[in-house]
Length: 396
Image (cartoon, rainbow, N blue to C red; front, side):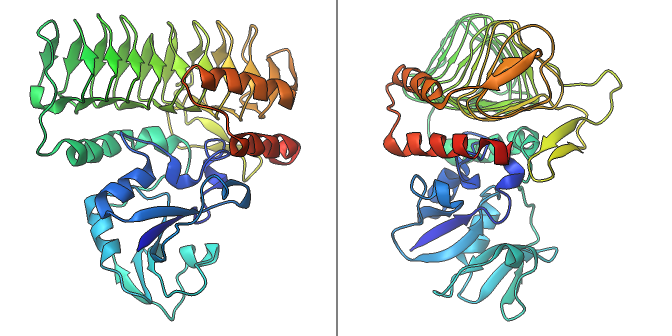
């Protein structure tokens, strides 16, 4: 038995984060959404996603008993409700489908997710639903994701020892260190939520952490880093300076001084020294963010919204990003002044204008960057980036 996580019509709405992954591969807390489904259900997980992503993220090998909206966070309550579904049943809330019990033939259309077929038996779900429908929801719901994942991964387990050189404010039981984690001479405040330090991760001396915070496996918080939760940094990230309510999916660097606020970075990104993001307009009004589905700036409804950056993108030193800036995949931004709020993938330049970043140069950079983390750029990875480059004008 297995679970299919369907993009369920959300894929385009979550660009640029989903250019390189299905919706279920987002990581808002400690775990990717798919990992959360796997750990909580014990079932294998596969994906129903865009055709060009299916080689890297295939359907499950075993027959699927359930098809679930991949944008849902897998709380214990919703996982339990899905596991109770029978063929021909659909889990619903407010008339919208959350999951289908597989009938062994066909699969739900996008329209079926918005309005379930009448021949199916509806099963109401009344508990809280956490759904990631837009990129800013990743940092907006980060605190809830961390709380659920922390309880799942730490319940009944003992943390590694926290050295006495540290200062703890709040409940020390809300600090959990995995094997090999090192935290020295830092201040950890758990009054607003837990702090999770992954395997082999390091929090260097002088760091200030106000939970809820995740420092993923083999990630580093640099000396004197100031991190306000809810914030989550995935595996192998390097983070310094000041960060508030931001998510870095993994393998990316914000290693120097500069401010990152209410933002989401993909994988293999790098923010140069003193890169700063504005997360609040001078008018204190709602931030507008580029929508790939509508082809224009749309109202996010958020007073605080900073940078949304796709995989493999970079910024040079002293780069300034305006509120609600959206950067596509494999862009390279540098120079003085504020660049535009919408920067297409494979762009090279800044406020004075952009050229197209040649695909061969982009791939060469990606190989060098990934080799530093001892991860190869596979044939599948290269094919995915080449596809996005070829589609650049159509999707920017």
